[in-house]
Length: 435
Image (cartoon, rainbow, N blue to C red; front, top):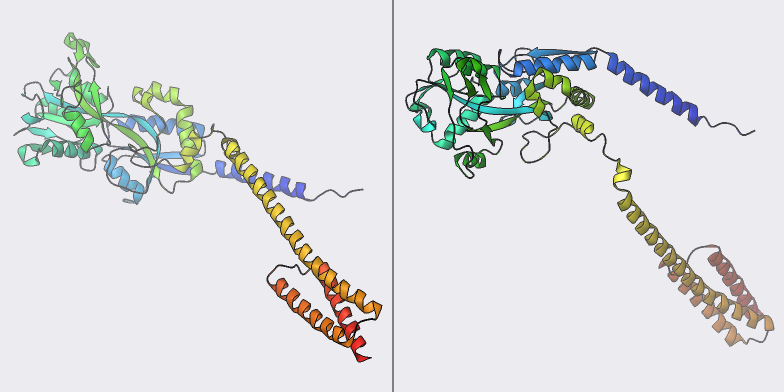
């Protein structure tokens, strides 16, 4: 009876061991640090929603939310510990111009630059900024970085106005009270800060340029700062029924927008990044119910507009339904296989031809030795003829060895038989000469 191969039990044991290790890995407690933004900012509710679904779908995870000044500080928390805090993933604006070892997991939403003024302040566009008190975001925030690039593009210097570095929630309070003249901040549409400001009846929008103008000043800004895109805040997107009209703005507002990204450290394990992406998109409907801004949630694309490349783990989730390597390259592989077989056949044919050529060469030597042996067997050769035979055999041996070295002959059994025949013939000639 044929004995069973031990390979199958070993393979089964390895598969079971791998499965148990995966289960153990999934069951062990994992704490992940999630850097968000300032208290009361729009990152805060998004972070809470993401934390809820991540912990629900991954029971062994504990997501710790850490507040910060914004995108710039979040990048620093991802790159190195600050006061003992080292973030694993964070929310940032895609235009943040610091950091190198970061990777994208998902595009969370689209953030819009809101430019608001107190209604009693004459402020039609950026050229009216002279001498005014303007809130432009906290140090380390994505808002401040974007505003600095915007002002630089328009040739506005900080000595032309009084900059105020407050969070959006504080700036709104001060704007409503008239303690500042205007504010710029980046957030999703229908954000709480802007709704609070508009519903007060004391605040109006300011446009950066004509909303519908192609090739205008906003398009010019995009050329110099390619991580943003022109954006139009539609009419009446912020309803204010208590004020007796449809809402603000009363006409379309031209501004810019930038994607808000969920990013992580480069060294975040691929399985963790995969599960974060999977959890977010598996719970898309629930997340949108908590925050309409998440309706813009999308997978990041490795194109020129993406600041940080997609993490391999998240990319694995996005490509999960793509055909495998063998399926995608079946035609190419078939072509190369056919070409390889054709080349192999050609090579085999050439080898066969060369072997046949070498055999034909050796046959000439066989015939020459055989002819001398036949002449010797007749016993009619004279001494001079025997001497000539001896020299001919020596030349044949020398020539065959040279051709063997030059690979014109093969050192196989046929060659060895030929060498034996040559030696025997040499002995016959020597014996005939000695008589």
